[in-house]
Image 1 (cartoon, rainbow, N blue to C red):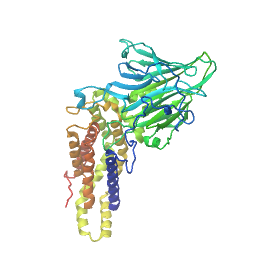
Image 2: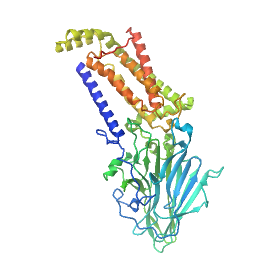
Image 3: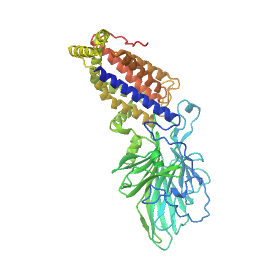
Image 4: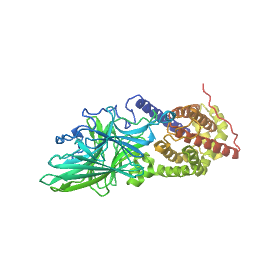
Length: 570
């Protein structure tokens, strides 16, 4: 039995070292050795032709995953290239007249700064951007079948409203509409109507195709998101979150696509669908194109020069001479607020990625949100949620701690036995097993109840890590941002102290090497918490304190003296 325990401890220790080494490699700009992440090799650079990428970024039906041939050039036009700034109460958008591309998006309710830096200034967070160094834009246009058509490289003029400066949502008004229009391209005019609502991160986009030619035209509308490979700056050397394209459909479900896979020219996604959406995801924030449910679409994701694109191509529309056809879509640019996303489209809340523990994490988030509604502080909501979870697992934990207490009570006899029979290992094993049977002690009895709880606490870890509500959410005193590390390292030090106390209350393994390992592992893990967000460290502290209290109480009820077990380091 001791051999089994020793093997388990060595496996855990070895795996921990592997994880630490991988995070160290990623932190220093090297690829992960054992567990490759979605981190790109380096900052991607924009193509030379600027805001909207080259003509190769125009998708082609049926070959969307490959690099398509160049699209037909836009018709010569005197429309000057301009940028138009539009403001609502929650968004500041920059539209490039080339294709009416959304070339910039600032979230006015979310600060770029976090923690202490927020006290000095409030700068809205820039999500979409095209400034020559970063590129992340939302584009749309038409693909002509056998003819040229206006696309996201086609110059467009702002028809309405006419303004010489920034365009703002009218005071007291709830809606603002922009109208962009192109000159004819092979007889086709594209008119884009973009509607903005007060308090909403959703843009209603309507494409109106006017055929001014003399022959029928078949075109397919498309929408795509194009960005570089830079990741969000809200990570540490010890954890990473997904950044990159994502596709959802009822058939393919939620599919994340790594930048590394696009580098290799491969993307595993559901290409043909009748529902769903495409998105670019990063920590806390995202953008997504939504087509109406029930409309056929072709999903794609690919690399464009040094950029990455994800998009949808809609069904073909036939536009007769002198007629107008229209297609609609929605563009969402904003924070990953789970309840809001659930109302917008099926599955859209999955951009807030809990990984394989989603089925556990979603109820935990629901409970955390309900507690926050009562107490009004996310820090105290975390504390109360951990208390509730520990209460729910109280009897399961009690079983584990009783087993540990029995082991602690007979530990002196085992140590004496090991010293007396150290030259007779086979007899030692037999005597130890006999003692376990007589005292009704299972050496692994404390492990199973703890293992059952591990998925719950890992799921809660991801809830706290993924929830944008924690960003710039204060707790008490010096903790001004639960999503950032404690600036004075008070919480990590308390976390380390509580880990040491908890370890000291456990019975020492009979094997001296195991005993030393049992002490070293918690200390090694504690180092990581100096880089973790304060909200995560708070959750572990509360869990540790409650564990210590319950363990001390169980020992007291069983008559086991409360003392610290310290190994002998030589």
